[in-house]
Image: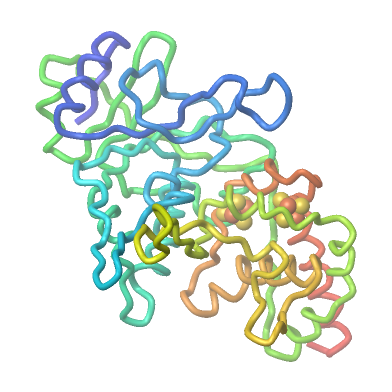
Length: 343
Ligand code: SF4
Ligand code: SF4
């Protein structure tokens, strides 16, 4: 069933929902952007429909709500510990199709990975109800259609924002009572069918091609261009890597809390091991690892590419390295290698 609600009616619905749910959506934070006098749009709790930024892509992904950049995972004293209590109220999470599909990617890593289930991700994920935000088309960094992540049916409600109100499809009947008395509508969400930017993910037929691709000179370009800041992975909708840090409360180092903090494969030292050896010492090596992981390795293991084409890594990169151009270069290198190897 679908409805049309004016902005005033939508705010009344939202206040009723807030009695049971926490509601997270993209929100504007004025003057907190990367450059002077620019804003940032990131996920936060909202209490009014007007707080929701629907006509611009958020700088950071919806994953921040489920898998935050930093969280306390347990508290310890000398001889005991207890896990952090975590969120308890159910959540309505407003998200575009790429962000919803990104959680399918993250769930495979955190909840369906060789029998291992991550407590902190799983307990948060159980609380999530996606509210699909109809995507008006993204921007010139988006390439969801190339990655097949432009559509989803994983939502309880879908919303189209307009000047005078909202159109809402209620897919899960438990939300229908909130719209009692609202005008019926025939709305169903539309999905983006074509992006301005397109990507062709290279076919890597065997290990010989893969090995030659890993050793291809194209990666050396990034030794000079990439500044190894890790901004691309922190903004990425699907990256899951984290490290831990202990915060002690006072002089006794055995009393404190352990935090889990997002880590980046793009930062020097990420792959260092005991004895001082590092597997990926240059920025180009680290770029090769990231791009192959997103556009080959994850697929070999789980059957789908890891990247959802949200384009946030491109937007956040201070060195203006677009992921789409990098994949394009990798595709050209793969073709060159296949020709050389007669494949
Ligand atoms: S690699 Fe870039 S485009 Fe792909 S999901 Fe991550 S941030 Fe989005
Ligand atoms: S954001 Fe750009 S410069 Fe920073 S690590 Fe990623 S690719 Fe390199």
